[in-house]
Image 1 (cartoon, rainbow, N blue to C red):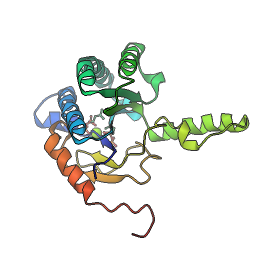
Image 2 (cartoon, rainbow, N blue to C red):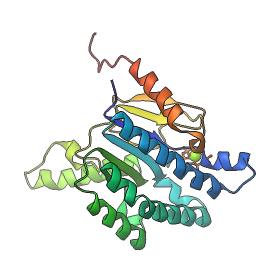
Image 3 (cartoon, rainbow, N blue to C red):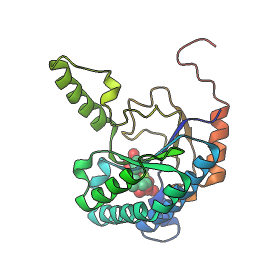
Length: 225
Ligand code: IPE
Ligand code: IPE
Ligand code: MG
């Protein structure tokens, strides 16, 4: 079975750059090529949702030069990919704490989100300025308000990912085997796949291996099968 929602913690750009004797940003810009390859592959395979952890709330505490380099790269990529989104019927979305995103980048993000809002083939979600604890805390505050007003809905509908099915498969590159404050609520029954491959090296062949591994899993959700 092809997973409906694949999420990827794109890790290892800095180490990849260091191995080539280059600056960390060189790793990030090569990582963009992997994003392109994986998006293409997701479209080919009929995956409906591809979410990519691009920048965590904690990542804001990295040196200013790296943060601003990453944000410039983000802005450039969003603008560069517009044609691909139109051609491949891709809906583009950003999920995360928008209060921390610079207005210039945010306005471009919103423009492309609106431009692609009716696209149906694949929803590409960039998790930017996102953290799982932020998401749950914010949802709890919104829930509490509605609860007090007597109109509380299902808790999940307050999460930043409302309307998007929980990930079926989570891939993390670079050999780290941790969740790093990513989708804490949403990964309750997600299958995990870890690979030593660094993100800039992760391309279609690696994605295919991850999907093969997913196919062999037996998802029981606490039941007996
Ligand atoms: C992942 O690569 C990208 C971001 C977190 C923005 P890293 O920058 O974490 O690379 P490593 O883990 O230091 O190699
Ligand atoms: C997680 O990677 C965040 C992203 C890939 C965007 P980090 O490199 O920030 O995570 P840690 O610090 O190794 O846990
Ligand atoms: Mg890292």
